[in-house]
Image 1 (cartoon, one colour):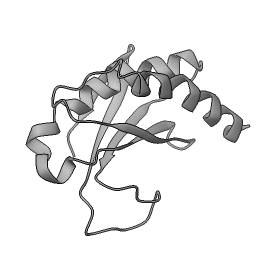
Image 2 (cartoon, helix red, strand yellow):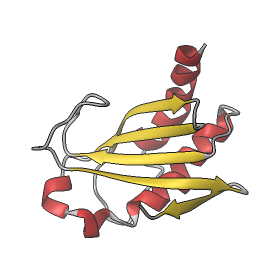
Image 3 (cartoon, rainbow, N blue to C red):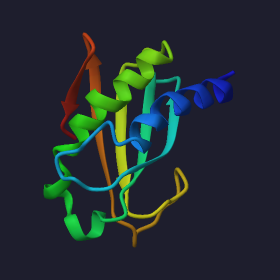
Length: 124
């Protein structure tokens, strides 16, 4: 059931990224790699490939996370009738399999709580 749900969620989210309906403040090119759901705590992970990440650095892409949460992830979850407590948005310069360590690959992660349909950034 989760696998079929993920397929539906990917179908809901992918057109927005492919059609570039979501423009991020940095202007960087992004592609959706994967959406993962976890049950405890109830959260969704939206993983993006950002091939220019090394050249840009975190400061240049920091504002992109909130836009991806609010304009892409939340609508995709709502379209799939999924409610989560937290949302993790990640960007990686290369496609690294989930959970694998790759110290030579630039990766950034931001966590958001979802309250009243809004993304609330959580500082680590």
